[in-house]
Length: 222
Image 1 (spheres, rainbow, N blue to C red):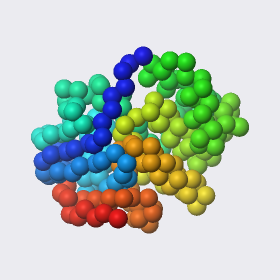
Image 2 (image 1 turned 135 degrees about the vertical axis):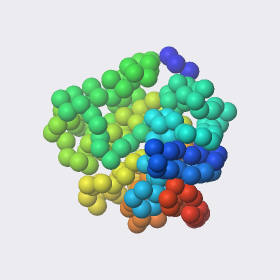
Image 3 (image 1 turned 90 degrees about the vertical axis):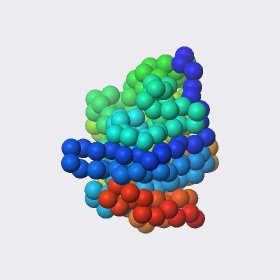
Image 4 (image 1 turned 30 degrees about the horizontal axis):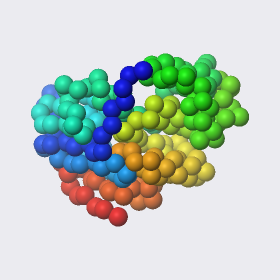
């Protein structure tokens, strides 16, 4: 089994990302701490999605530093990736796999030893135990989101990223998601939420960051 990376904070320093003539991020410096939920908000083109992709190690910055505790991008990218969980606004699961099969595939990718008990517990935690052997194509939007969350948390990541997670959810599913995000915070994870949903951010976030034109406009706590 691959050794699990652990870190208590994620930090970006003077982070810049340029796409041609577009400067998506322009000198962003932020610290995201374990045991806190941080929402990243702003209008279209503010740089939210680019920041999330950098934190997910899916986009390399043009300049600036990205630090995961004692680890740094790009040198330690492979180690860091093993400690990241990502929940997108789309579940991105194979529709013909059952929930259990999706998690089994993830367990294999992360080289988890004897993962059956962990998979069963993850399905219980997100309320999908009774649906474990149904194919994902039969799931509702909310059920797919819960499966995506179980998959993201299965390998016990230090950093949990959410990309517009309330998109398409009804009130009940949104409340379940809020509880899951708070639970991840209480387990000591670094939790970063990118969203346009300001009321949801106000409910779950300990720190709210507003970006504007690729720069930090405001950081508010509480």
